[in-house]
Image 1 (cartoon, helix red, strand yellow):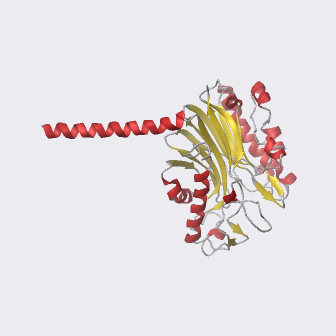
Image 2 (cartoon, rainbow, N blue to C red):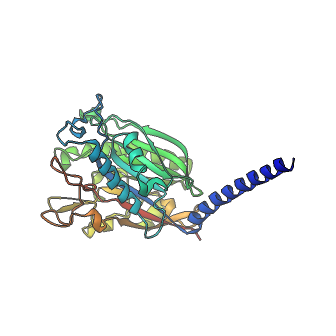
Length: 352
């Protein structure tokens, strides 16, 4: 009998220790007073298997890019290194939420999250297959237990009226981020193929889908905490963002009129971008916030600052493209880089 009692004692003591450790771990993050959210275009993060339903042939071992298992392993390692470095200046464990795009499937994400630098970060993810002809999609990485997933679904962007190919779906996620209920929209809007003006109606259509969904949320709760992030293929000054989304760079205006706040306008005006083409910087990778994030009396967290994460190791260090993001391929040649985009980050502070 004494042996049984001792066994039970040790069992419940162990359970208590584990429970306290988990609570302490969560408390460390919550009590730090800071939290980060990021977005990153992973640039053609495929797995090497041929998907007969999509046009992914270039990223197979026999394809134009000779995308072998060895290259896939290195690409996953590079992406993991970049993600592990995000926001470490403020939050040692990394962002609580990371939106990603240009990822093919679950296998690619799992490979990346299995790398040693991310293995102990407790990231989970949500992703759906979409209609993109190449098979690339958007996804959300979230750190357990700092984010509790409630609901996720794809929002389709109908471009039939423009007689053009389908684009990536929007990923909509609802969850609880360290005590705040949040609504997250992750986007990868249609590219500028054919020119900015000719392709603009497609991005306006994508913006309208976001705007309609956001309005529905705000009708139910004007103080809802909403995050819209993605590679928008438009700059902060373009019509899809300023006119269709109605986003403003003025925090006072956002608060007064309950508009989306865009912290990236000033970056763009200063020539700071997330990608570069023909020596012209664009800031396509943006994270927009509903007005409630600007009010330190609403919920638990409020907006603090933003950053383009253009650290030295992510940049090309010599040659014609010095200072550009160090991409994975030069043409069809693997150059062991990261992405042709820099990640972007917003930082949150705990309300007083």
